[in-house]
Picture 1 (cartoon, rainbow, N blue to C red):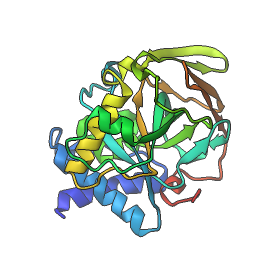
Picture 2 (picture 1 turned 90 degrees about the vertical axis):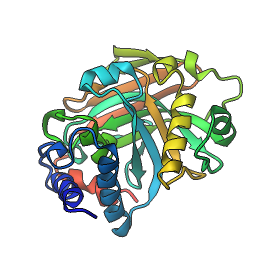
Picture 3 (picture 1 turned 135 degrees about the horizontal axis):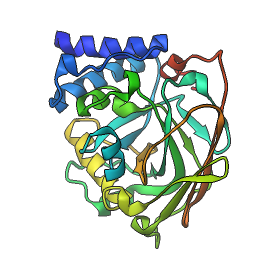
Picture 4 (picture 1 turned 45 degrees about the vertical axis):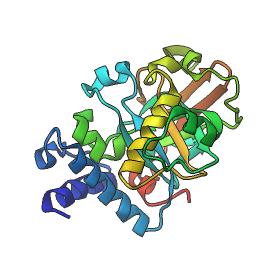
Length: 275
């Protein structure tokens, strides 16, 4: 492991542990070296696994043009979901676990089979998916002010924070995910709208891209994993305690309820506080 990879990983880990965002890591790994950025991500993940955490799924980022425009990043990336980061519909989410949270409405895929084919197609994804759930991803950044380029967010585990899952599973038979409409509300007021087609044409297409990419990199998707397939609309900042609801045509709704918590520290996300 080269020194600049270790230095970038250490900077991000320190930001998470201290609760103080850090400067971008692109000064260490450059703005365009995606492989170096994933090496940083993997270095951080391996440290968490050594500390006892488990991989419970993956997430896809920057899947919609709206999100890409918000951050000036115009290609998809992926991150790893670790144990202790999932909440259920309406379960209180303590803000003390987060630094700079934002929410995005997504469709979560729960896999019933491995997806280890580096040439995986949408048909492979459909066969491997046991069911889908309504979801809200709570993205977060260890980089101060969300001052990110593609290598910053990739290195920072694709800006992964927490995620909230709905509790009603839906099979994919007859469900056109590209045509699904979405409304994201804050305290009962619509703040964003979107559609499945905004997510790389369809969330199924996004998951197929992920399956190929992670298989190529030697870490294929496994049965039982949760895959957050990407935003159906723009990301919304979370400024304090409050109630967000994402409603999806044909899939239902999921609520993220943020509460003030000054005791629980953000780094507990990475230390398995909810294993």
